[in-house]
Image 1 (cartoon, rainbow, N blue to C red):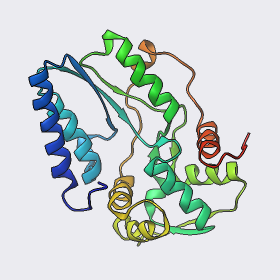
Image 2 (image 1 turned 45 degrees about the vertical axis):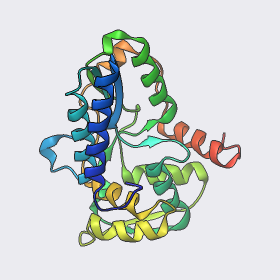
Image 3 (image 1 turned 90 degrees about the vertical axis):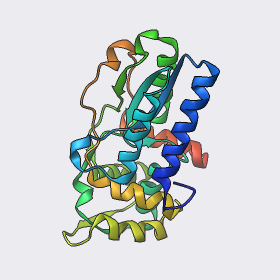
Length: 229
């Protein structure tokens, strides 16, 4: 998406096809792909649909693919996290569309890394698809309010029915430091509920999951060097 708003699905598709071709030539044995949550029957946004298409293309390779499906990853520098953070820090009063009531299951970047390395080490994950998420299921309103609580800042969120995700994506692209070519597809995807539908990976790779507020605290400390403990 950083390459421009138009055509990112085509670029995703071409990159996946090139990876498959290179993997087949090199005799690649397995690959681990980190994509996105979302169900095909939920009228997915272009961004989420592209994540699923990439997984399908990788599945055609001669190698075995492990597909990890995640919602928002909470970590310093992550586009979705930085977008939510900027809204909280720069807009103490927000007028938002109905997407603020959509449920999401965010996950700390450290937990994602644990799953990725765990899949690399555990052959039982080969060729499987797993949903990965943190311990909290929150609406986007709750995510912003809790982030404001960690930063000890004021935020008021007013939801109106007439403001569509597409319209709101334009002002989000202006207010936040995230490039519009990235922010707009991400905002359009907020209409889709992204929560784990199964938790089989917890039995294969068990560890204590990081709570949302703790993940935010770690991300803010990494980015600013401040002590939020």
